[in-house]
Image (cartoon, rainbow, N blue to C red; front, side, top):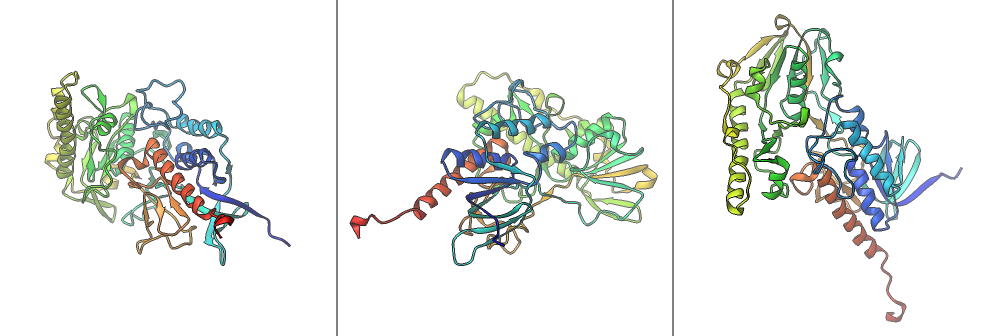
Length: 422
């Protein structure tokens, strides 16, 4: 029997914000393409996040240039279901050729001719180019130190939905980036006894002198930083759009009843050990906070902006007891802890992409998303081209660059010498 093969110029794998943005730019350039997605469009926003999640940036900023969020105030923080609906509507706006329910199993280079053979749950696709738009949040990571204890409910933040999901008892939240902080705060407000294990983080102000921190990063040129600072590669950002948006303040969380601890070191016979670095992490976060305030003040002074002073922004609450007398060990049973939530991030999974586009650590080798393997492109990864690459608007601009590079390659490949020049 003859194998039924779908052919296209460019195959985009993934229909989240990266895949939708990529399709828009390929459509603009009239490049034939197909987008495949194993679930629904923007599925991670619907089923991979907790119920009350909102975007961490305001609606005027965290969007594609071509469409606003309908019915939302520009300074509001959009609920996750509305964000997913936005991408569905955006894709429909330009009739994006997206096929959902299609899982990609493998992609290999064709032998003796250009292009790739892609095996999917719906058959074979042959494409001249592949854009991996699967993003950075592919595989939830729970560290190997997690205790083997059937009496404990252990969830990754990707599996957490709401406080009612959890059994009676206290909760240990490991990880104090945006997800861990917001989940710990929600659980504490729901009446749970919460312990929060705090690692290294940056802590920007939600707003300062009447402007959201995303505005400050923009005018200060920090969104366009081309590389992360040495030592900051794995530092998370603690910021929240919850309840209308607010600055994350670990001291305030402690005074509201959350017990803070240092980075989780390990578990032994029901006892968790924490590193003695809580105060260091919080004060380093303070430094990043104050540095942005200083840069903002200087910018206002240099440009003569009429923005009201905010001296109270530099006030810190007194160090709570858990900072001055840090918890080093905690017996989970004695503390009444029944649940551990691991807000410990994600790993990428490119096992389906069987080409020479990776280094020895199995990480993509690329420049601004253009892979070392001809015809392969990456989109939606942290620091793909700059600091803003994983944000909604940032991935849109990265997609434009990649689409332009694909168009250039097509021009070379379609070149034919004029007969009169022969």
